[in-house]
Length: 134
Image 1: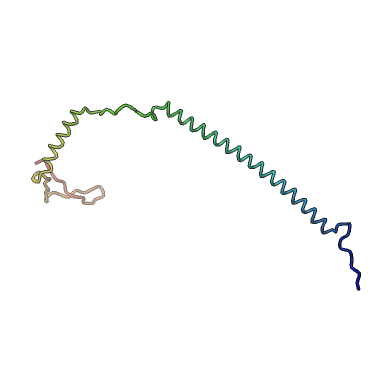
Image 2: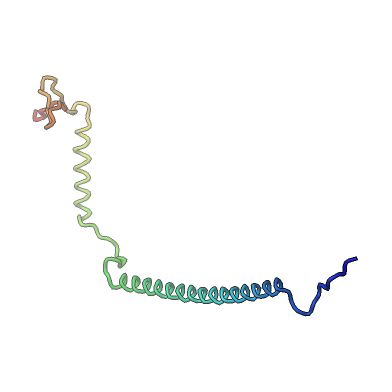
């Protein structure tokens, strides 16, 4: 029978030393990555805080400019018409009177079938000129 060699010796094997050293390197890299992540998170938080402050400043300046600029001021007084009410009523009455005459069946536009066709600048016939000065 062959003699069994002891597997658990007091000196670590080369392979286990290599594994331990790789494990330590990986732990250091993980710790460094954690530090980098926390640093980047603090930078992001700082940038977000600055962005919020700048947005607030823009909002306040916009509100301030709206208060001083008459373009943005709300005109609280009632709008007064440019044309007095009596003039508007007179014009409306004249419109009703003239549109009633124009809409009558015997007052329509007269067409002249013998009128010459109108030629546009491109040389196309577009219709006939009607003389309504009767």
